[in-house]
Image (cartoon, rainbow, N blue to C red):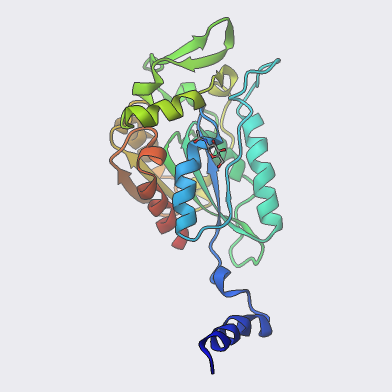
Length: 275
Ligand SMILES: *[C@@H]1O[C@H](CO)[C@@H](O)[C@H](O)[C@H]1NC(C)=O
C-alpha cells in the first residue's frame, strides 16, 4: 500500500469508529485566562502563543470592563465577574473541562467567577477542574483588595487618575510591572496600561474556590507590584481551609512574567491541566 493511502486509512479510522478526530484526542481542557487591573486581555498574548504551541486550542481571555473609563464608573469587581462567567457558561454548555488562570487583581475576579461552575465529580458535563493563581490576590469572602493589604498602607504606586478619582492609575508601570522587560519590550507593552475603577478595590469577595476545586500558585520572585512576601501571605492564608493540596511553582520574573517568562508560565499551566 502506498504511504499516502496508509496514512489516509489511519487518519480516517477514528472517524469510521465514531471516535473524535486524532488531533483533539485526548482532548485538552479549555483555558480561561483572567487578566489583572490596569492591563487588557492582551496581557496574556505571549502566554497564549506558548500554550498554543503546547497543543491548547481553546484559550479564552475575557476583557474586563473595570479597565475602561466610563460614566458612571464600574462600581464593583462583580461587573468583571459577569464578563468572565459569560465565557465560562459557554464552555460548560459545550461540555468542556476548564482551567481558570488568574493574574493579580484577576485572582479576585476569577475566584468569584468559578462559583456555580465547578465540575461535579463523575459528571460528563463540563466545568472548572482547576484554578491557577499566578502572582495573584487570594481574597477571602467578606474581604476585598484594599483589605488584603492588611493594616499597612496600600502600595504608593497606586495614585488617583487625574481629574477622575473614581479611577486609579499606576505610577511608573515600567518599574512596577515591567521591571524585567527590555526597553524595547517595555515600550511595546506600556501603551497597554489603563486606569482601574476604584470601586473594584473595595467590593468584597463572595466565593472561595479553594474549598471546592484543586488549586495551584505560581509565585513570581522579582515582582514589584505584589512582592513575593505578599504572594506567600495570600497562599499561606488559605492553606488550612483548602480541600486539595496545592500545586506550587516559581518563576524568576516580575509582575508581567506572563510576558517576560511566558514559556515558564505556560508550562506550569500545562502541568496543572494534565493532573
Ligand atoms: C495581542 O494580540 C492581538 C491579537 O493577536 C493583537 O491584535 C494585539 O496587537 C496584541 N497586543 C499586544 C500589546 O501585543
